[in-house]
Length: 100
Length: 178
Image (cartoon, rainbow over all chains, first blue to last red; front, side):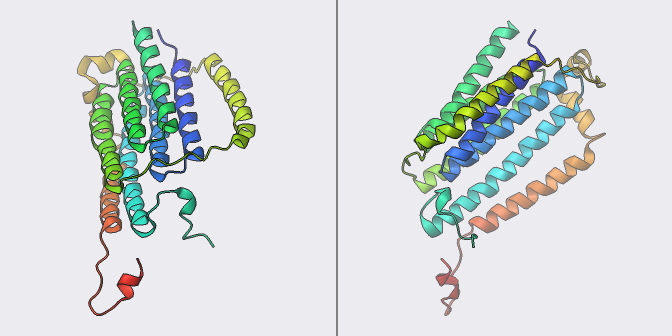
């Protein structure tokens, strides 16, 4: 029987991987992919606690997280297309239009 | 048997996650992300969440990842060089040490808590989809409706953002904004 803490550890490692990707990578699309990894790590946590604590609420929140991730991907990629059309770059360091 | 599957799914998902962050070509990163999503869905099966497994495969691997790959093909990105300076190690090495300590604490914790009202035997009797549906449409109906409105807003926002700006006739104001 796999203990709950093993799932929590896997989730923590995946979350830190995604966080490192957000901080280190400069390609906007890869940054969004790292955010997806972080959301998946949170989903593992929610479903594991839902199973071990015998409650259904965790799985429902994980479903909502998947829906939010879909919306985030759609809007984020639309923003990438708009920025790429104007500046021909997806480097996050060069997106400083709103900076003053 | 479950332990073998758990070790396989968790190790491959972590490895593919590292590859997603580390690979240079964005298309390769997308394919590594596909491996992450599929193996995380395998973890969901081990946790008796078959409905979430199906949703993960259909929505994440089927829809969101294809959207990412579409945009990658559309933009025709070159492989960018990484901006990982060696001076970052001064920040990352203590962070890794702290993370290992946190993992050690996580593996020692017992995680006892108040049990809910749906044990595994009750879920397995009618199936996970039945249990999720009953719970969602009885206790969490408001969140469900809010997520629906949110998705509608996201779709409209994406269409408005990605629309090609049309130049106004006899007026260069619309064109100069590009």
